Structures are given as structure tokens and as C-alpha cells.
Amino acid sequence: MASAITSAHDHFRRGVVRWMLRNSLLVGFVLVFAALGIAAPGFLTWNNLVSVILNEFTLAAIISLGMTLVISAGGIDLSVGSAADIASLAFIGLVGVHQPFWLAVIAGLGGALLVGGLNASLIAGLRISPLLATLSTLFISTSVQQLASNGGQPIYLISGNLPEAFSFLGRGQLFGVPVQIYIVAVLAIVFFVILHKSNFGRYVFALGAQPGVAWYSGIRVSYTSALVYILSAAVCGIAGILLSATVKAYVPQSGNAYLLWTIGAAFIGTTLHPEGRPSIPGTLLGVLLLSIVRNGLLLIGWNFYWQQVATGILIFLVLAFSSRRSRAVS
Image (cartoon, rainbow, N blue to C red; front, side, top):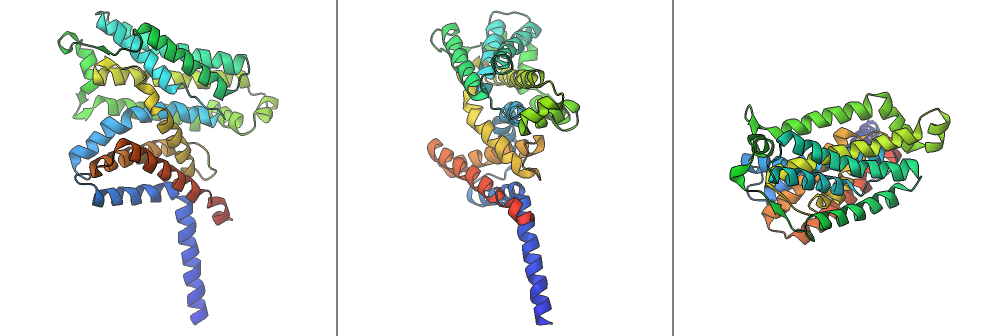
């Protein structure tokens, strides 16, 4: 009887461990949220949680959607921040000289698409590795910004002369909910369908898993790869426009601040998938996890550098913990 109880106890314990390993991201999120709720003054207040969503989560989530698509295809995009910055520069530049708002939006998206087109040409056309190609685009975009902004000078707008649509895009609300939340939700749904519910998404995962097999299977590898980087740049362009509308300015290199953050969130998100694949829900949860850590440590009083250290350690722990999943399942 005692041995049967012990066996049942061991079986239950192993089952709990397996569940925790399979859901390491969810477990980590709950633990971190609870710890910050206890340690960080004001962390659990409604105003602070809303601030986390608007000021920490929103833009990083949008850029991370593009990064997730690229990583799913077996690539990397170091120019996501550059696409956002070029979009911001073009958008603010036209708004600042009183051009129609819709034209400024088109110009911003067009600038981002130029970045994506350059990446697509280098990677799909010239067969340059994604790391080197997007690094080159990053350097080129940085130089373009410096030349166009007198050596990297910010461009500020005067609030009184801004069109109503500009203010609505930056700080507007619809039915009491900030408009940027709707934009994130729509983009997340679109990218979820693209990556997880469409033939194109299956081609992307096939390209990321085994490019040679994908080519022999009849998948248009060059076309798929090119479209991945164009879509990534397009969604980053949207983030750049939203950033400009929020701060009412173009600030050089501000988009690059999201680069490592989005890479980390995308790889953290792979822990949510049974096979370790990138996923849109996983990436969004990863962005939210990093957002609350950043906010909570700020409330505790840690400076920026220690926040970066803690974020790096958190990413390491989540990924290391999840690396045991396959052994736990087996």
C-alpha cells in the first residue's frame, strides 16, 4: 500500500515537472508578475498596468511581429529598427511641412518598404546571408538618417499645427480604449493568420526548417524569402509612424532601441510552441514579459544598466529552463 502511494506521488510529481517544462514561459510570466507585484511599489495599480501596455508593450509588439516572421523563415533582421526610423523620418518630414496626412503615412510606409526591398534584393536576389545583408541595410539606413537630419538632429513638431488625425493616431481613444491597442490587435491577428493559418505560413516554416527540401518541394524560395523581409519592414514602418505620432517628433536611432528586445521576445516565444517554433502568441507574451520586467525594475529603483542585466538573465533562464522540455516529454 505504501509503495503504491509513493509511486502515485512520484508519478504526480513528474507530471507537474513535465507540465512546468512544457509551459516554462507561462510559469515564468506568472512568477515574475507575482514577484514584481510584491516588490515594486505601485506595480499592480491600474494606471501603471495601462502605462506598461501603451509605453512599453505596444511598439515592441508590432516590431516583434515582423521579427517573428523572419525568424520563422530561418533568417534574422537587424534592420527592423532602421525601417521604423526611416518611416518616422519620412512621416514627420512631410507632416512638418504641412503636407496631407495620408500622404505622410504613405511616405512613411514607402520609406520602410525601401528598407525591406533592399533586404529582399540582397538576400533573395544576391544570396547574401540575412545577417550580413540586414547589417548592411542597418549601416546604410543610419547614414541616410544622419544625412537627412543634419548629423542626427531630432525633428520636433509644434503641437498647435498638427492635423487632428495625427493626434488621434498618437493619443486618441475609441470607446475608451487607446487606438494603438486596436492597431496592435489587428496586426497580431493578420500576422497570426499569415504565419499559422495560410499556405504562405507553411512555406515560411518549411523554409526555416530545411531550405533545400523546401526548394525540391516546389516552394518558391526566393519569392517567399523576399516577401518575408518586405512584410517585416512594412509592419516596422507602422511602428515608426505610431512612435512619431506618440512623441510628436522624429528622434534618430530610436527604433534601434527595440532590436535586441524584439529578438529576445521572439526566441522566448518559441518556448510556448510544443516543437520550439516561433509563434505570434508566444512572441506577444514574450514582449509582455520583458515589458513588465522593465517597468517593475524601474519602479523598484534599478537603473537602466541593471535592468538590461536582469533582462538578459531572465531570457537566459527561460530558454535554459525550456531546453529540458524534450527530455521531460520523452
